Image (cartoon, rainbow, N blue to C red):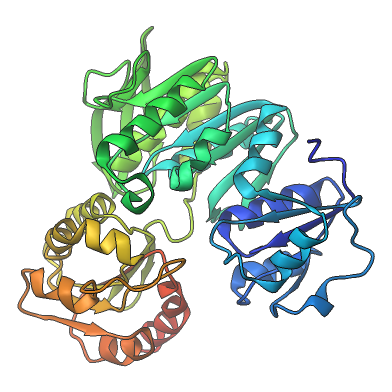
Amino acid sequence: MNVLGRKYYYFIGAGGIGMSALARYFKSLEKIVIGYDKTPTDLTRELEREGIDLHFEDHLDKIAPYLTPDNTLVVYTPAVPKELREYQYFLQNGFDIMKRSEVLGEITDATYGIAVAGTHGKTTTSSILGHILHHSEMESSAFLGGVLEEYNSNFLNNGYKITVSEADEFDRSFLKLSPKIGIITSMDADHLDIYGSKEEFEEAFIAFGRKISERIFVKKGLPIPDGITYGVESEADFDAVNIRIENGIYHFDLKTPEDLIENFILKLPGKHNVENAVAAIAVALHLKIPAHKIKYALENFKGVKRRFNRWDFKDKIYIDDYAHHPTELNALTSSVREIFPDKKILGVFQPHLFSRTRDFMDGFAESLSRFDELILLDIYPARELPIEGVTSKTLLDRINLENKEVSSLENAMSRIQMKDFDVLVTVGAGNIDRLVKPLKSWLNED
């Protein structure tokens, strides 16, 4: 199907991070983009300001009569319930309906596609790479899983010859892609409600690797055949060495298969982000971007919203992060401890999905025990129904902390205001980000 041949593009679930990047792409092509989401957010308000017409009620009278099967492509996300009236209307009236991953696959297949896969690290890695390409004036577009601070967007557009996209492992969506270049950042088991076992999960990544036609870059140690490896002080093909921290900023050199490139600067915290940067640099070098352009872009990369966003107040520090897997939580807490070794750290965590909480209960308990004090919010269900015996209280009982409690999102603000802390960290992939603005306002007044 020629996904570019329609006049109208209707997005069901337009406010999702991946869906909104696609909506912006079609808008950049001067297509008419409209759609539905269940809740207005900062992101949907940005889309509306950009000229995308959205509504937030599942009513058929919101569907314009000029939308026909011939002139409209309907795009949806698997998170949308199939009983949604709008979805059923389009299904029963002969409209072409495609998953987001299918549309992205069609777009990237028609370009020089670069896809970044991994349980964690893919948003930061793809964002750094997209930023480098953009700053180097390559004719490229980037579909990102987070909003970049510098651009206030999850879609970068400087042309359409090269596309950078995140290859999402959920629902095996990344197998819809056939990129020229691939990056695999991590393969820690996740989405076991879909895959059933760690072995099936890893096999899907191996299958993704087979679909890459030109070159695949793989974190050192991952079981992917024929990959060019990258890492941090790991004897990889592309290896960050001579790492030092100066005034809280990472400086490192890069050993490549050919030579040593000195003095890269990265302003993101944590060695895991140095590793993400190395993957992006390796691909940029493969694309023949000069090292001095890569260095300039990397030094000026401001980060991704909700990826270790930090605000400094008079006597307190506030950090907000998207981490929702034990490995990500470990990386986050390690970075916080590295920067603030002697500070009292209060964590506020919202578990994401009942199935993930069940599958990694012990891992979450261990990771969350690294805070000094913890407020554990109710589990954010997203697409799932509750699972018997899987609650935040169940998780709380396994966490090795004296000062810990469960709270609803609605009561979290008042609970935080009663605590004594030096560093506050809010964490999760659900709707915990609703706390960010009120917390910043309170801390600014305090």
